[in-house]
Length: 332
Image (tube, rainbow, N blue to C red; front, side, top):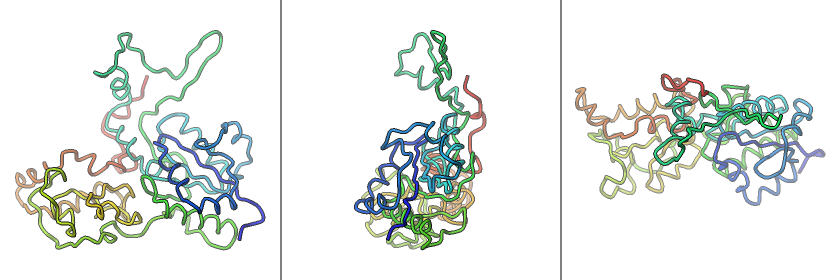
């Protein structure tokens, strides 16, 4: 049963790939229920809409906004602040908005170095050393472009957020459940969890959803999956020497990657109660290392070719570390 008034819905993509928008559209036949319950008032991925349209809306008049993408530019920051004012419920939707995700790995270097790599790298012909500018005056008109911020930030680092929905992207069945819950709450037939809760996910870890057998084996090596012999189909990947992030990752995805023989990469973020994903995962890995001498421990950990990518692939911007030393240098 639908309410007498359709609820007002918005979705925005900041610095992201667009996968979260696709995942919402992929909810299948339930999109019809969504269309009956919500009026889309702002969704740049699927409709022509201007920021000026949103600016003219009354504060709090958008019932729910799904905000995907991290905060990388001055435009992202402006729209985040704008949608916070206009939205009764603002949801950090997907890993980029919740944790910074892959764009957050840019926090390993300064913005100046990032721009240099893009505009003067070995594959770029730029003899005039042209760099992007935030403003350009021509014929009496000043053109403005979004400027890069010094670091990538999560949505919650710049505005207050009501709820988070993890995933890269969130699983479609979880999205459908979240939309149904929010819609029912707006109709007055359900109650939302306390503000700050995580929606569309579980309360434990991917390991608890994984059907692979665990035997608490001690490891003498870590290896990339392509460097190992054929894996046992029903045994824990971590116990076979494959770096799997399941011990620190929140459940809710259905443990699809381990079921397919691929290690969990942590896209659903930190499990409930975990302050820092990377620290928790490092502790989990250390607990299975079969060594006590420093040299032996170093040798085993050397099997992790990209420690930052392993421990903070999705969560660097939202972690306790947030950025490497020197990365906060502001672009010219």
